[in-house]
Image (cartoon, rainbow, N blue to C red):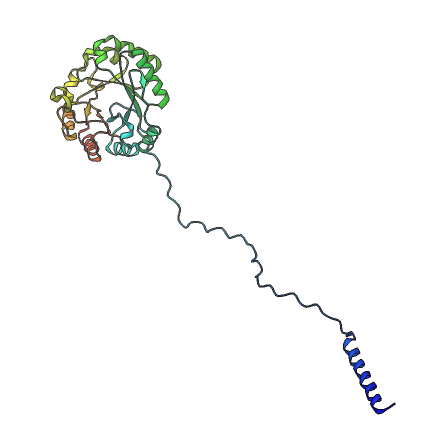
Length: 307
């Protein structure tokens, strides 16, 4: 073999050996590549938030209602016609603070019911502790009027009732006996009163006095002047004894204008009666007027003062 051929054979062998070395598998085991790192943080552990701490102060308890007052015509009272015109809590607080003892709410006329606003009586009673009664205007049908009175007494849980008898009973005085009989058949012992003119002898007062009604004559000096002063009403009230006569004074603007509480209290003192009422509680009766009556109750003893 020539030197050139020998060189070419050696070079080829060297090339084959290098290729075999490159292609021969490594005996070292291959490891899998680690997974790529996640960029989202793992969720936080879920825990329930602790309850809030208890309040450090205690809420004040509701104000308890004043002690209940029994019904008496010797107390001072007030008439309400439109319950939506006066707040029951405010009125209850004013009356109790002034030493008044009752309120009467309008419930109807001529046998037709006109009940007070829902909840009014409850709120008044809660604020005052005073008894609540009803009053209605009597018409031409005594039996229907008596049935209405008895029905409203039961429906509203009234403590007493006042019948307002005027022109129809003057036109036919026999209606007085008819109403009284029907009413007492339904309510034999309920405290009851008659509201009528200062001189109401024309309606026949005998049945009312004989059935245990008190007389609340309308001493509306604001409308008719001194001819209907409380003392005049007492003198015209026979057969009612003075102890059963409790005049009503008018707060509204009448034909003679306004009459101040101070004037009415002076006139009531002249009558010598115990117990009176104000018509109407929702008309021209700010807190100062209730206070003026309250002062007279305490100092002049125009009524038995409620504490």
